[in-house]
Length: 123
Image (cartoon, rainbow, N blue to C red; front, side):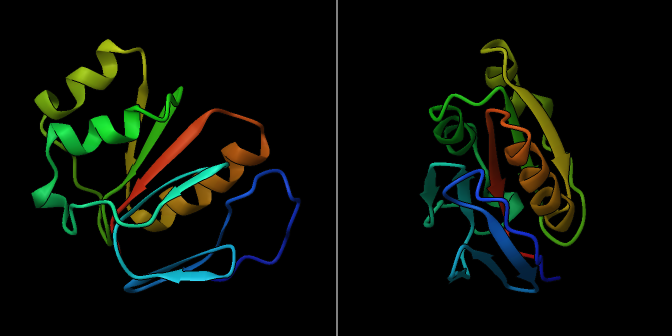
């Protein structure tokens, strides 16, 4: 899906997504990533949902979001509660959804000025 509207509310915005790629601004990324309006980590180590560990999620938490959106790929997969517990203990809300929905939700929350971070696996 391609997005057309550009409101310039953040430095990093998701412009498009498709199977195996996410376009952030003008860069087409093909690996898992973490994005915040002012920071992009384009080489987030887990490449599949099943590889994700607490340490991977804590790397997203270091960006101090109020909300972490976890895009789990083509389908929504819920992590084991033990993986999310350290985030919740820090007061970080976690929303789990498929990556397409996560991309759309990230853009909406950034446009609203929310402190949001998205950790995204490829579709």
